[in-house]
Image (cartoon, rainbow, N blue to C red; front, side, top):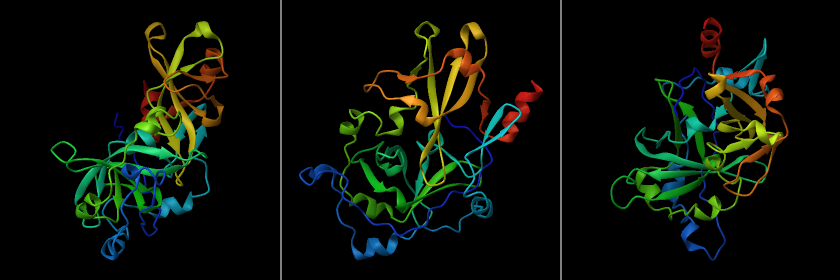
Length: 269
């Protein structure tokens, strides 16, 4: 689900280096080493249309949510995972070379790797590859759509070994998609469940909040709140995550919005 909102570029400018992402005996997951030419390509280009860096610096140490009048608005220096997944991946020449398939988290729930479906995925010979998050720049284009810029050309990407994310799907909590769309059980069992619709991350790629939607049906309008990610209790893969809050307590939380414009429109309704 794509949401359009005014944002600033979120840039981590570092040299890209391909890393080993799995056990040494798992050749399928081990990327090939970058050649000198690839190393030369691996400098992400930051000066592109649509990137505005000043506000990112000004708010670098701020929270990812701005709170006011029982409303929580996502700050301009935050990242929401649902917009990154499916975003175009662009090489140093500005050419689209794939899309983001998923995000891999480390034990600290920070983005460790970006899984990319290369440009051939919908034809023949396509594959998923994984690159180090430090080799990527999450930004927006002129239409305010998310995109991810990397320092590799499509030819260089083809030389990286295929990445199999199936083992991570069986290890709960390693993938962004293992959270998005997942049910959340409230403290009182008979109050039903909510659903995680998004994850809000800081500019360093660390998950801070889970966006939970609940209500609808009998409550008529679906409600949306951002809950501290640490408040979610782990559960076996595929099962609802547990939240130590009742439905009444959830209703008391500030309503979450992706932008001030969205919050203002809601106030007028």
